[in-house]
Image (cartoon, rainbow, N blue to C red; front, side):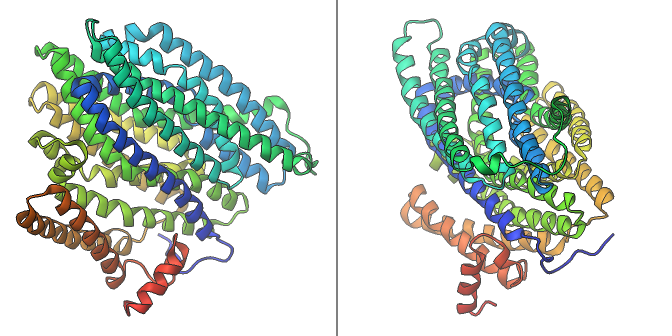
Length: 549
């Protein structure tokens, strides 16, 4: 295996990659944080049963979104980035136009399928007929997201993550406000119906649609401004022959298809879990309301919270793909390897302590955020905390495979992992009677298998090997010490005050400070690497003043 460079290759521009990725990551964390905040009153309004209907509808919607348009931003950014490097300006415009036409057709078709077939899908496949109404309310969001995805991909392909970030924040803010208000209003207006919680869940999904519409309006405004002020640049004639329209569409389809398949198989595990759980637990005599309640805890609490740190990996992956494409188009393999190494390392420096912290303080976290002091919710988080690391790593390595044109590997790996996942979950639910705990264990093993397979393929394709000591082992050691400090601080403060909120507000910042100091003292981050990371120069100056470097 080739030895990895320790210093930044010339013109690597890795700092800009991490900064742009961090813009998306900060927006992603903010979006997930808003999601946590508004889900708390929604759980109180709908109850865990109503959240179960909401989450089932959302899983089905998510599959429809992936099959039609979820991958458009990635595909568009990749195609546009490659043509910009080759100065094919007119081809960039053709890619944009073809993407718009494709998105309208695919998004419109999938919206129609969910509107017409929503009753059959929810009743026959998921054994949750009460999820049909919220699914139908949310279905038009797919068409809106399709158009929005093309514009996001256009800006990302040009190395500008700000429009995507701002639109995500706007989308989630409107989503939160409308979801809470509509859930409460629908519960009141339809209280005389047979299942008012189904109507309440529909109010929640109405927020998804409204948020997407507002985000699309913002992106359309930004696109008009951009194209107005850059009209001369956009109309520049390229030196190379212009791509024929059939070739543009062929490139779009060939790029989209493996990404869609990869994302579809990768994200399908959640829907498979809901479907298997519904079918098997229904056969065992568990009522729909009881099944929905358990899925409400699993999806509405555990998965919602564990997905917050994964937003960083998704954002870094989205920003890394066009950057890697540019380096590969310029035939700079050394630069490609360095960008991969730094992106994975930065991601692990965040994901590992998040997983340890969530596992150590599982009960207090669930009580603080969801006001849920049950052993079930705390145990789900304790068992499944390290899914944060595996999903973060698998998300980034999937992006690497897509960036180096090994997208078929990403599909294959997700499919292999899904087969194992189905077998494991089926055995745990059917024969071991592990109930919802089987879903959590399956969630962890699914991401772990994808990580292992991706790692092997990247190594073979690029003769690449990630540095293990400072990427994984030292952050894990620092996180373990941090976790012990967090637990001890929490227990001490709670013994003095008997207040969970006070103990958490003190123990979490203490843990973050300890971890930040430890990764520097232990050498997990070097003086050469710090300036490459977001806010790295300020941190470097601070650590020097503290005589840690």
